[in-house]
Image 1 (cartoon, rainbow, N blue to C red):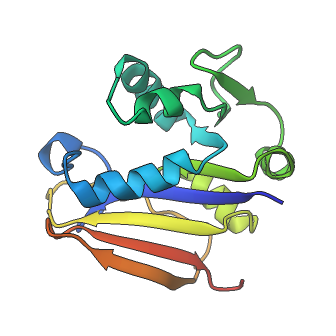
Image 2 (image 1 turned 180 degrees about the vertical axis):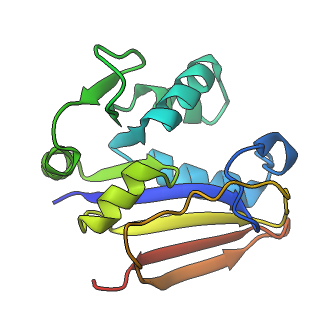
Amino acid sequence: MGTVTISFEMTLDGAFDQMEQWFDDNDPDLVRHSDELVFGADAVLLGRESYEFFREYWPKQTDERGFAAHYNALPKFVASTTLTGPLDWNCTLIEGDVVEAVRGLRERYGSIISHGYGQLAATLVDAGLVDEVHAGIHPFIVGNAEGRLRSPHPVGFRLLDVEGSESGTIFARYAPAQR
């Protein structure tokens, strides 16, 4: 049975956007954590917003580590009620029940990563399909953040690991408390 890991980056006040102000992709600790997650993945699961943002960004990227090439080559599955297929960028639209579809993906892939924490992540957490949550918490306050950490009910997590970087970013790994 494969695992599902949700990964996201945010500021102290919960901003997921306006990344040009606070996200430092040259931070060696951030690069290491991203490499471990992405190079260990067999598939990617995205919601509509992440898909639309990433498909504009990632296909244009190159790097010496092979990160972009690996990420672009991974099979991607997109949960959306508004998109229609076929999708580009090595993506397959999930049609029907997303929970059942992700259960099927866990049978096919050893490690599935999902970026962001919107409706898709909340649905997966609620269904008990999330094995880990990786949160990069950056030492900035944007001031006009729109919160995204949502769930239909309270959800507890237990800390698996935490690491701080020289830049002040905290990398925290959690698992659902009931596991």
